Length: 109
Picture: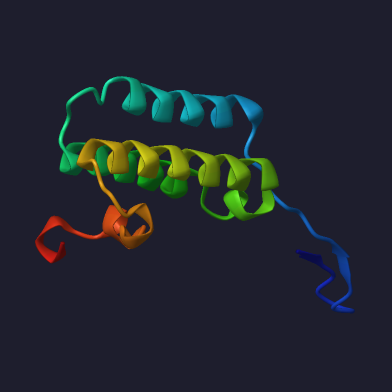
C-alpha cells in the first residue's frame, strides 16, 4: 500500500503475480516427478512433491494467492500426483486415501 503519511490517504495498492515462465518451470518439475516415478515408492514420490511445493511457496509466497492460473495449476498437479500414488498402491477405494497423507511426515502415517 502506498499511503500519504500526512493525510493517511491510500493512493495505490500493488499485487505481485507469478510469471508464466516460472509456472511453466514448476509444471515441468511436476511432470519430471511423474515421468521418473516408474516403480518408485510412495514415500519418494510424496517427498519429491513436497519438496517442489515447498520450494515454490518459499520463493513466491504472497504472489501465489494473486495468481489464479498458478492456483489452478497447483490443483491440477496435486490431482496428478494423487492419481499416480493411488495407482502405485493399487488402491481399491481411492476416496478413502485422504490427501493429508501426502503432506504428513512419514512417522505419522
